[in-house]
Structures are given as structure tokens and as C-alpha cells.
Length: 117
Ligand SMILES: [Zn+2]
Image: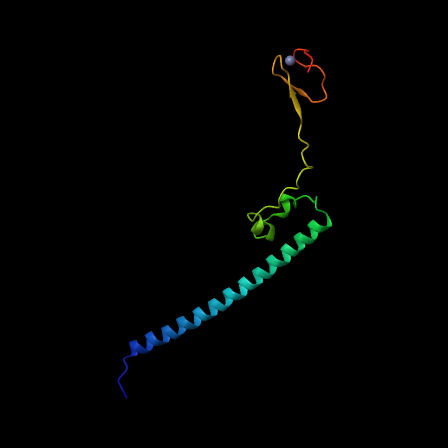
């Protein structure tokens, strides 16, 4: 039986305690992360459902974004893309031969100089 000094026992006990705390902390972190993921997924599902219900729904009011709220957590994520505006009808313009002013296609005379287009 080797003679083990008390300091070795103390160090060993501390090491075991340290490992136990680390395992406990890791598990607690895993649980916290899993809960967070669950909340995020739920929030995303709610958001998608809301968007399907009313795609023009406005963003939640700022008062709903408080410290620690899910909205605050996700506010820096990719924002909801703006609804595409109605397709732009290209404006056809006619350039006046006399003064180079652009006139509407339907115009028969130049709005600037009155010349026939
Ligand atoms: Zn003109």
C-alpha cells in the first residue's frame, strides 16, 4: 500500500468535483440550448403561419420587443423581405429632336419646346 499524501487526496477530490461540475454544467447548457431551439422553432412556425394568414401583416410593435423577449432575440436575423411592389411598367419616353427633352410616348408635341414629335 503506497503512502499517499493528504494533498494528493485533496487534489484528487478536487479533480473529481471539477469533472462532476463540468458534466453538470454541460448538461445544463444542453438543456438550455435545446429549450432555446424549441422556442425559436415555435416562434418561426408562428411567424410563418402569421405570414400565410396575412402576408401584408405589419411587424410587431416595438413595445412587444422587450429585453429577453424572443422578438429581441430574432430581431437581428434576416428581416422579412419586403413585399415586391407591383411590377414596374417601363415608361417609354420619346426624345424631342429639337431640344432633346424626354416626352411621354403618347405626347404628340414636345412639352418643352412644342415641336412635333
Ligand atoms: Zn422639344
